[in-house]
Amino acid sequence: AQSVTQLDSHVSVSEGTPVLLRCNYSSSYSPSLFWYVQHPNKGLQLLLKYTSAATLVKGINGFEAEFKKSETSFHLTKPSAHMSDAAEYFCVVPYQAGTALIFGKGTTLSVSS
Amino acid sequence: GAVVSQHPSRVICKSGTSVKIECRSLDFQATTMFWYRQFPKKSLMLMATSNEGSKATYEQGVEKDKFLINHASLTLSTLTVTSAHPEDSSFYICSAREGRTQYFGPGTRLLVL
Image 1 (cartoon, chains in turn orange, green):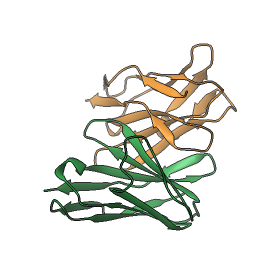
Image 2 (tube, each protein chain N blue to C red; image 1 turned 135 degrees about the vertical axis):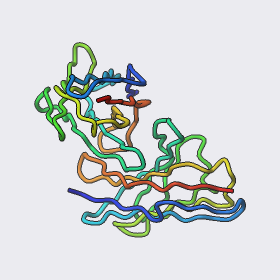
Image 3 (tube, chains in turn cyan, purple; image 1 turned 90 degrees about the horizontal axis):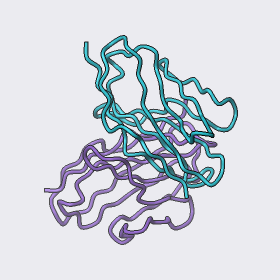
């Protein structure tokens, strides 16, 4: 069965410092993996996706994630946080290819000035 | 990019009444749409998979007679909450699949008084 575990429910950083949001996955096959962001009172926006091509995936707004099969991880990073990055972030895996998504519990990112 | 809309964005209704939420894919056709529910500060939970021209597939624990789903065309799926009760108050989000990526609507906040 597919599943994802977001290791931190809340991450706080200062503006200009690096961001690391951790996600481990469990899958019986090499999965697709996604990171979505949800700003307050806004819809979900796709940040980036891994679909078995390059293991280092670059997304929007300077975010990137690295797929590490040996560690079953797909951590999200950004070199320098911006105030506008404050939001809820979800690590996501499909139930099966092309089907509905399983969401992690989410990580709330807070950015202080 | 692909855009999914939802209407209404916010609705308040009296207990016992029914509410219909629309989900539209604006610039692509979607044979499959998904309905999720999000509780405050919680992750998204899949409610059902909506298939154009056929019956929806409901997740375990979701009452199909309470949450009626109709996918009448390749660009429209509707979720009707019948005989709504206060415990149905929540944030309902739809998504539509294009290729391997799901695009999410902005969500509908339902408050049942």
